Image (cartoon, rainbow, N blue to C red; front, side, top):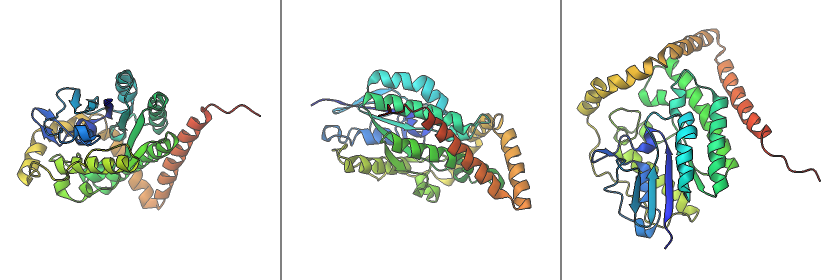
Length: 301
């Protein structure tokens, strides 16, 4: 039987952060790989991210995702490597890190994603995409800080929706999910899903692929092999690794986020908050319109 090549691109979510396996991470993509064909069933238990390419029965799975990656990293670094593998199935799940940077530009995000999607579509690969929850809600930030991030993530999600439809991607609506309210679904850092959350993503992607006739193996198990992180584990993460995580982002994002929050409170006090939403919607529309303008036009009859 011909081997199925599955390549995963993206950031820490696809790398598997929150779902430890040995010395590395496993994550939803590895769990999904084990359910793509009958011959790959039951092979995900030992898979981690230490080796970028794994053979899972008749599936050859390569995880190119890197923690902290933005759309620019996917375009410039992961795309060439992914195209060289000529995948049958490729997941591109990225964008949250773009919203956490002072360089956020929805026009650039849209253009990069369009280039990545188009390149794999031209090769004939099946695209997997997902819209994601905003990081402010995941981290439980105060409203004035959370709303600007939520607005940015909605913009990214709108672009992903539109481009997924354009390129016929298998798209998962993951902007709302149990891990937003169910603590058992989330890892100690609160931003990433834990093992149970990763398993839910794998289960939902598998259901979409099976419905399209693209997954013939058994559904990944939704039941975790390890217990959910305890409160003490969460506090330990915040006191150790979490401190570094926040510090690295504060040097880049915090000054702008504070300006965004001040703007948010100013508009809220004047009752003009709707202007911020309208401004963001207009930017998304302009970004998508710019992509449409660059599409090849059919010859006139």
